[in-house]
Length: 314
Image 1 (cartoon, rainbow, N blue to C red):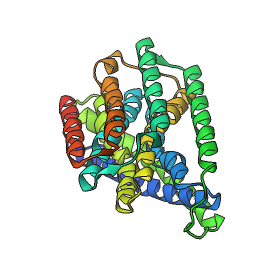
Image 2 (image 1 turned 90 degrees about the vertical axis):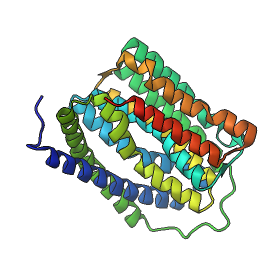
Image 3 (image 1 turned 60 degrees about the vertical axis):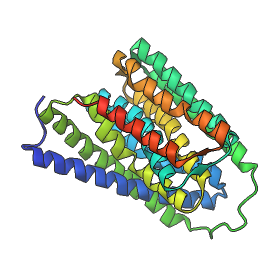
Image 4 (image 1 turned 180 degrees about the horizontal axis):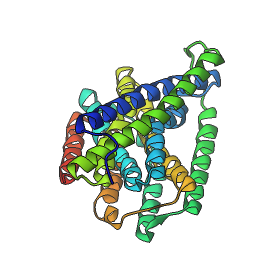
């Protein structure tokens, strides 16, 4: 396979341009989606778990679909697994260093159980070796069920007393349209550059997906999480991170498999999937026994994430 661009600098420029377009487009989509949610009277908790989580997961969706259609399923799988690890280790770690994250475990226990269940199902499919269309449809069906139960739960909460004024529909839809269009083009440019960089340095596509693609597509989650921390809304932060991890597994993997079934490497079972499960599972004792992630916990999460990235070196 030959690189798409004639030299490494052009590949790096494509990588940076695609990433920049993804981040900007993701921000536009989230802004439009949150405004629509305000129009429909959704609670902040529900917005974090569904609208914001969906919006910040769309870069992973477009990257993964583009990679799968271009015959690079390892970037697709690595992107999802790497993003879920980065969301906890990198994003929650950074946010906890800025300000301890306090919330009762009951706040997100149900959502965390969905994430862990989907992760174990993915491990089973990896043992089988293929993610087929039937599995993809089941994942999408699970996502629809999760969204329905989240909506029913969120709609039972009282509306905010100081809710912001409702926006008109036109700017909301315009922002969403611009965001989706930019994500599509950004994903194509980013994947082209990422594959070229992997070829130039003889790095596997899986490692590219687990590192460059994963961290790049997690930037919208990081931006929205830092904003939530500054505003003193730990619920929105946790809802965004846990919801994004669930959307990555159910929406991204499920949609990609329905469009085009793909293979799953068995080596994922020996390192990457267990690490993903461990990073999600560690949230349970942290919040169950202490109701918070302290700065020390945040530092340890970042240290663990750095150790995982070090293990991925070619």
